[in-house]
Image 1 (cartoon, rainbow, N blue to C red):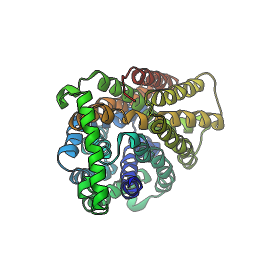
Image 2: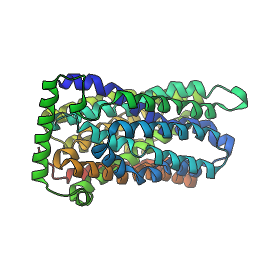
Image 3: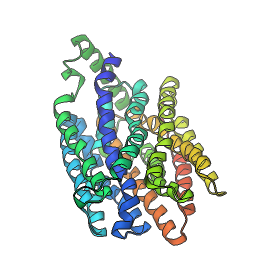
Length: 414
């Protein structure tokens, strides 16, 4: 039964997150041409890249609650269609204010997607299997990097209808979200009891197991959704997620520019090499999620990868390096950043009742993703003032150690 659920849902959810993540990070590749054409400084580019998360923060909690209490299928479909349109329109900007506006709007339209999916997975997977399920979903992060790199490299070389390649990159990479939104309306099933692709006995068994787990979680931590937002462990998870997203998006957005500055690489070389850390991260993320479920341990499985990632980035600051050793350290860092996500996201739905867990997931996502603004913006700010990325690297190191410390303080049951 579990394998049937996985075969039915995970490939499609994985595809949706690939599309979502490409629309978030394609600005990093567009920036290789856009900043020069539009005259944007590193500070403007960093602010515009990170300001996405101001809009994203606003609707994270409502998105998760809508999935819990209304319909995942409807929420996903509407969210995807609207954000796809906004993502494409970003390719038509000309000024810094237009850049900021479109990035905020993209954040607002995409806000309900990720917490909605994490909540949705708790409707289908038992607690013991959720880290693996989250890992299968969130390998879309490195996979999106792998996919976006060659596609972006190709699109950056075109010059159709008098428009530069970076504009076509943004215009065309928004279209898949619209198509996936339409498909979501017809393909997704909200709850196991509605799944005609499972037998009646499988539906009943899965519903009974999940209901029993929800009752146990509610009895162990009997708090309302509102109180869950300010629960000690929820705030610690939010802090851990904040540190992780600051480093994740700092590295994702700025990696192409950091690589380009190392040895004067071409735009094509830079975009293709940017895929290597993501390729390395995929098996590491899956293995950490599997081992966390197998052992039942969450905190150290979330903390240790972040510590190793921080050490790798700190090593980059000590001496000048060529492309090969720098790529190796960037690969270790990126793998450590994303490998912590599966055990971290398995914590809320294991420890709280359904509505409280949905609210807490939205809260963690909303507060945590402010790190997605902090990381890119501070890297751009330091680069603008000093002409190097060293200050930005230390920001990511501090964020990763903060993330590890927060999750180790969580009081999670095995």
